[in-house]
Each structure stands twice: as C-alpha cells, then as structure tokens.
Image (cartoon, rainbow over all chains, first blue to last red; front, side):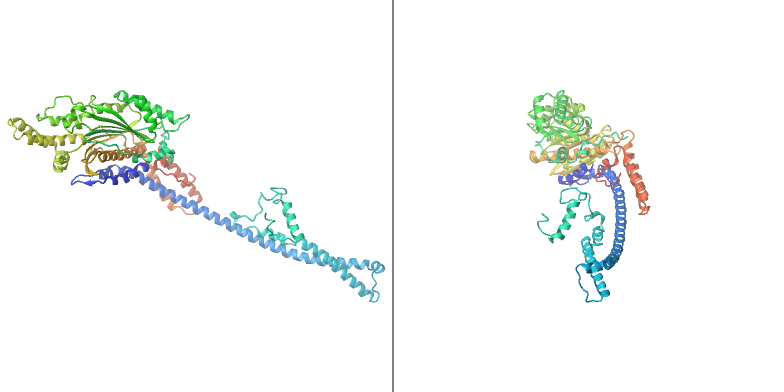
Length: 220
Length: 409
C-alpha cells in the first residue's frame, strides 16, 4: 500500500495548491479522509516493526552470548592442551636424559666385557694401569653410543614436533586456518605436493640438503 | 481464510511490470482544449483476470492480446469508431506504456479521443471530448446530444444546458460520453474509480464568487425562491431592457446550482452518502472537486466529479487534468490494496487487522517483561508473532509491505 501512498503524498505537493478563503483545498481533503485510513495500517506496521526488531535484537544478543561462551570454551581447552603439551615435553626431556644415561651406561658396560678381545686385536695401551685402561675404554664406548643416540634424537626432534602441531590450533575456531584440513590431509589426497608423504619428504629433504624452506622455487 | 491472492506486484517488485507501474505518473499528459468533457475510469484486475499475472502455461503476449480483444468487444458494442486491427496493433505496440486513439469527431467537430493506460494491477480508460468549434455552451450541449430546441431568450435555457452539461450527459445514451459510461459497466475487471470532469474556460468569475456559491451550497431552498422570483421578473419584462442583466444573473445562479448537483453525490455512490466539496487553485487553474470520502470498512469504487476552469494553454490544461486523474488513480489503487481481503459485508479483514494490532501490543509487553536469557520465551514470542501474522487474511506481512524478516518465523 505504501507503494501507492508515498507517491500520492509526494505528488500532491507538486500541484501548487492554493487555498481560497473559507474553502478546504484538495490536499486537506485527502489528509482528512484518505490518509487517515492509510495511517491505521501504518500504525500496525510500526508496531509490528518494533516487535520484530526487538525480537531480532534479542536473538542476536543470545547468539552473540553463545558464540562468546563457545569461544571461551575453546580458549580454555587450548590452554589445557598447551599445559599438557608442556608437561609432555618435560617428560620427554627427562626421558631423553634417562635414555642418554642408559645409552651411556649400555656402551660403558658393553665395552667393559669386550675389552680383552679388543686389547688383543688392535689396541695397545699396556703402559697404563689395566684398571684405568678399562675405565677409559668404557668411557669412550659410552660416549660413542651416546653420540650415535643423540644424532637419532636430533633427527626426530624429541617433543618439539608435538608442540608444533598443538600450537597451530588457534584461539578463534572460526578462523581455523592452522588446523590440518581434510582437503590437505590424507596419504594421497590432492596433488602430490599436498599429500602427507610429500610433506614428510619435504621436511626431511630440507634438513638433509640444507635448502631453506622459504626458497622461491619451492613455493612455485 | 488465506485464499485471497496477493497482487502480482507484491511478487514482482523489481520486474519490468513493477517499474512500469512505478513510472506511471511520468507518462505524458494529453493536450486538452477547453471546453472539454472527460471520463476517467480505473479498473482493478484480480489475479484471475489479470493478463500480467503469471500462471501455468502463461504467455504474456497471448494473454494481453486476448485482453485487448475483450476490451475492444466491450467498446464496440457502444461505439464502432475504431477498427479492431488498428486497435490491437496500437495496443500491442504500446505495451507496456499508454496509448491514445483518435475516435473521430462528434457533433460540431468535437474531437473524441480514447486513452488506455496499463499498470501492473489496474488498467485505466480515459475518454476526452474537446476542441469544439465554439465555446458557446448551447452548441456544445447540442453536439453532445441535447436535442430539444434551445432558445437563448428562454429563461430556463441556461438551467437546461447547465443541467445537461453537468448531470444529464453522463446518463444520456445518445451522447458518446453516456454510451461510453454504459459500456464501462461491461469492462474487464472491477471499476474502482470513476472520474467525471467538465472543463470550461471563462467562468472563473462565478467560481470566484465564493460567498454566493457557499450560500447556495448551504441553503438550496432559499436560492430557489430567489431564482424563481428572478425568472418571473424576466418573463414579465416585455421590453427586455433589463433582460440581459437578469439573464446573466440567472445563468450564474443556474451554473452554481447545477455545479452543486454535479458535485453532490447520491447515496448509491460509494459507501458514504456524505460528499465533500473542494475548491482550490491548482497549477494556476480553478478546480472544484467533489468526492464521497471512502470509508475504512469498504473503500471500493468511489467516484469524483471535477470542474476545472483554466485559462492557460491546452498543454497546461491537459497536464492539470491528468495530474489530478493520476492522484485519484493512486488513491484508488492504495484503497483497493488496503481493501483486498476485507469482506465487504462483515468487514472481517479490517477487524482482523485491529485484532492483530491488539495482539502485537500484548506481545510487545510480554517481550519487554521477558529476561534476556530466556531462550524458550524468545522462541514462544517468535511463534506468537508468526501466529499473529497468519491470523490476518492474506497474511499480515504482505499487507503491511514488510519483506526483510530475519526471524525464523
């Protein structure tokens, strides 16, 4: 109805209406009798509009509150995961120390048993005391095993890999760009560059060949 | 309950038809040379008969051609002034704008024209009879069909002419205007506006005699006594010394009285018997306008009579008449839009809206008293709003013209 009433109101003023004494003009006649009917509908429309806006406002507030609580929950979970990861790292560091000691003593005790054979074959340190000789050899063997073990630990990066993945989870779940998505995951999903094996090889290759990861040809 | 179809434009607000309806008032006016008589009629097309209303297997060209043929058939019964092929060809070319036909001459070279305008929900038909040879009202009345002998010296001649020009011509089947009005009863759609216009030039002096007209409109009996006394005085005046002055005064009084009859409506027009008279200056012309105020319970089909006196050129005069017609068209369309869905006998649709308004007020109070974290209350309020919307015939949302609803209603 406004579709007709609005131009009617607007165009009435274009008629350049002048009043004659003691007579009602055309626009006043319309205002008195016709617009009154339209105003009734428009009043209902205004009330409907108020109710609708209030309901929409409340719906929006509720949805904002639920989004806020969800965000807080995600942040709390992320914090818990980070704490867990840190404790795992501590444990892994302790485990690394223990394993290093274990490796050392494994080499130490293993070499002490095989010392007479080695001494007989190619090592000649008879000038020293046999006890010191045995101790030195065992120490060297322990260090040798420890060095080999450390190389393996460096290769597999201890607990750092776990922390790296955990840190990718953002606080805002809506912008979860760091999460491993389905499209990129999978063993052979997507192109070869995006597959799991390709990523694994790429990370290994960068370490092996010492190529910087930000090389332009790598990013095409 | 909800079987009332919403007008087509509500479904197609941004289509070509919608734009056409929106720019309807930009269509150029027709030049009009005083003295002239015009009939302007607006017909509402319910979806069942609207050729522009989309439906199953609908072809707009075929539907419109069929529509034009039916209009022609309705007109041909009363006037055979135009050939069917010309009629169809011009109307088809005119779509979606308006078109004007020359229907030849009437009487003393009176120019007879027909104009047809198409809107999305309505169509309008305007007949204009103008450009008479002479501004003498005797000859105009004769060319329109007043065949009784008119003697300028007869004291009742002016009364007869004015009476015929303002009242008799609309119901005289022998006159082209009267035949057209009778033909309009058989036209397609529901006639929602009937505007009758008489345009004269040179009688502004009578209209400017506001006090006399007001007095005449207030008390006709007193006026009748006075004018009868003047007539008897004229008949007794054998020498004819003061006859010109008297005749002029009688003519003026007759003009005013017939003008009162012209704008005074019978109880059969519209739902209200109270008529309102408007006199003002529009676009530097005098306009005397009479219409029965439409009532809120049943606003369908109203009639307005208009007398225009303008000494400007034909284009300005035509523009003035056209603009008033467009305003009346907009008013009638708005009223029919308001009236759709209202049962004329019981006024049920209007009662539904009033009830919806009360329910909305209650719902507003409920929402304001509701705590902010009440999810179930919020869902109930949305459900109530949906129920209120559906309680009105045709739906409250289309009736109110609201389309941006975010709520899960």
